[in-house]
Amino acid sequence: MCEVYVRTFTISTSRRFEALKITHLVEQAVTESGIKDGLVIIHAPHATAAIVLNEYEPRIASDYLEWVKRYIPPGGGWRHDEIDDNAHAHIASAIIGSTRAIPLKDGRLLRGTWQEVILLEFDGPRSRRRIVVEVIGRK
Image 1 (cartoon, rainbow, N blue to C red):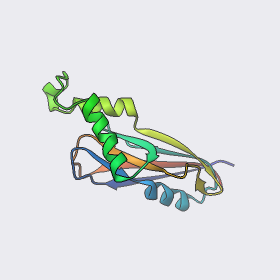
Image 2: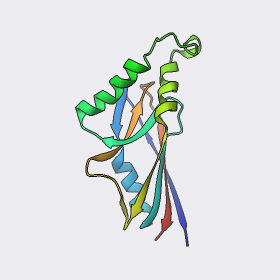
Image 3: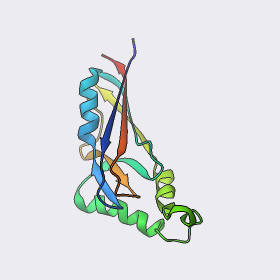
Image 4: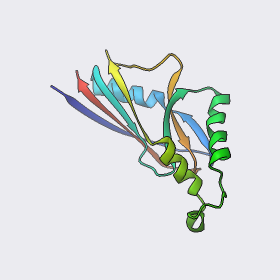
């Protein structure tokens, strides 16, 4: 029988561009769910943030954000900036994506040695960024 468990976390960001490791939140939801084998979906229901699954160390975390600033620059003449000056954040979120899925086996996320779940903030600071973790599978 397939079980479904959903947990929503709220976190704050402190800078306009920021990379936050959130693997511990995902693992907490997996533990709470009691589900051992299945799939974990991580979703940021925001139009100006993204979720990535990759290495997290300070230099590469900075590189993710610098890439966005270089190739999708704030103030880059985007038409949406006429409304609220955050077109770069919408474009980056759309390209990178706000959802990731990770297989779950024996109660553990099947991720590489260096892989972490990371929230990329492109339009902060924000006091309330929601992270939805859905665990689907068998106990």
